[in-house]
Every structure is written in structure tokens, then in C-alpha cells.
Length: 117
Image (cartoon, rainbow, N blue to C red):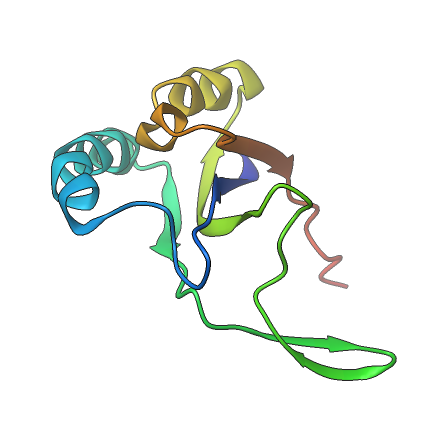
């Protein structure tokens, strides 16, 4: 099976995530359903939300983060899954609760295993 990284992106507020506590409470059952479905099939490798605070290291030094796109979109979480079908990952991603927010997205990136020899 091939592993895929799903990056969850969403717009942010001034110094925090856009979602409110109420939004998160309403969305939690949907996240549990999405992640639970993948896990029950034995295809979940790892998933986690990401704290807002960040440090960015560049060749020019250290900056306070997080990195935001031009429209204040940033990565807010990730999921690593394994499957034989990109179409299956796309179907899961289309049901992601983050897609209810403006400027949100799920980016799917196939992972390349390092050679073991």
C-alpha cells in the first residue's frame, strides 16, 4: 500500500485559527467519523491537529510563525493514511469537515519511502 499525506488548510484569524470553540465542538463528531472510518479499515497511520504557534527556520534565521499564504490560509492539521487507491483518498478528502470553511482545502501528497538498503 502507498502512504498519502493529507494537509488540512484553513483561513486564520489575526493571531489564532478561524474556527471558534463552538465550531470545533460541532465539527468534532464529523472529524471522528472521517478518521474513525479510515482507522476501522486499518488504513490510518497518524493524524493530529497542529498548534497555531510556530517557529520558521530559513537560511536567513529564525522567525515567529506560522507560515501563512497570502489570504491568511495556513496548515492546521494533517493525516497520513495508506491505501492502494488515490481515488479512495480523494473520496475521504471530499467529506472532510474543514471544507465548510471559506478558503479551506485538503491537499493530498503521496509519500515516497526512503530506500532501506
